[in-house]
Image (cartoon, rainbow, N blue to C red):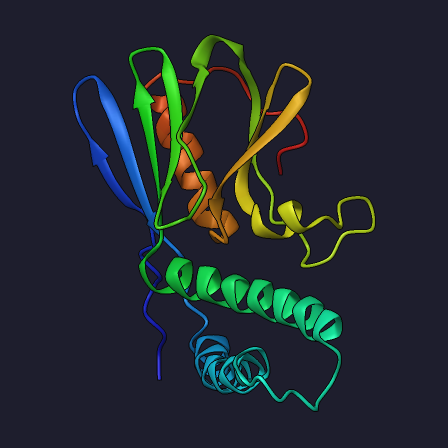
Length: 189
């Protein structure tokens, strides 16, 4: 059986004065299924632990321990809910035009749109990150795994979460063709 060429995840709208990219979150259905099942167990655990606080004749673990445990349990559950909402409904919306590149994440809690002046963007390239990197092992670097990166002053900005490198290069070439960005990126293949 011959595999059909992949047409990409990004929905590209090319208007006269701007380009809009809408990139839906990459869906890992196996992980989503596991997290949904885990969430059922999480709810059961929260209910059982909650009974400890309600029961006036408490004979279980000390209240201080249960308070600390319940706090960690709640944070873990909120993290899984965040992951599920982003995986199922999230999308990156990138708008390039009017001298700005704006990145917003719809469906990502606590995220606000950020804009960058096109004149200060340099060295845009496509570069997939390994899942774990010794130099960048923070939670934010794991969550921000954009394949397209550029330099903005003394900072590296990423977008295009989990795009394939070929699709990322196509988007960069489109931006160059439309003259939104200039030059050849350093370190490109």
